[in-house]
Image 1 (cartoon, rainbow, N blue to C red):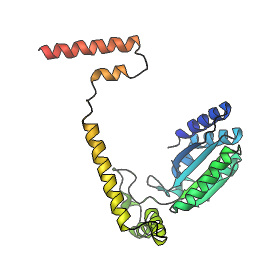
Image 2 (image 1 turned 60 degrees about the vertical axis):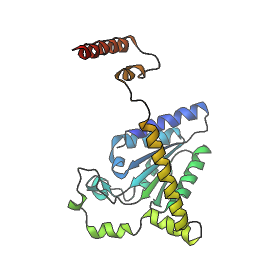
Image 3 (image 1 turned 90 degrees about the horizontal axis):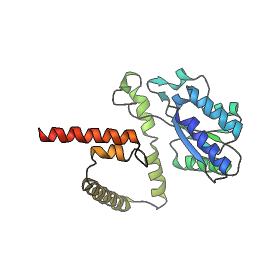
Length: 228
């Protein structure tokens, strides 16, 4: 999906026009770079030099189609050159590399130097959706090789080797998270259930005449059924 990219550029242009210290980031997959909205967004971002950071999560599969089948471009990052701004290819499974590249792009945008496209080169480990069966078009050997590059395992090993993290801290964090989630779930379950009227009351800041009429009609119908 690339439909969000023109919107991201519009938001950044509005912030630029108002003089707000804002950078708008947008995330999308490699398949999105073959869609029209991608090119429209990139073109406007380049022309207007908007404060945008575009991050393409190149997991190498546009649903069930390999990247080589949906774009002839050697990399995704180089597509930025056609629109007049930098494109950076980064190891998407390296958390520190992604942090450094993103910070650099954010600094460029804040300094009025325009947008940046970051290609995060990674791999989709699972199926695209619950209706997808990736075993029909991918090899188990390929998946196993990428499993060794898991970004969470890599980063955890990095901080463990530097004495920043250990099993004790891991258990404490997991316990804290579990307690927090359980408390929030109980809080949510104790909140009053929304009514049908809430659909009408909170659509706009003030209810329109049409919505008032519809809510009254619904209330009468519901009241009639309760008397039967």
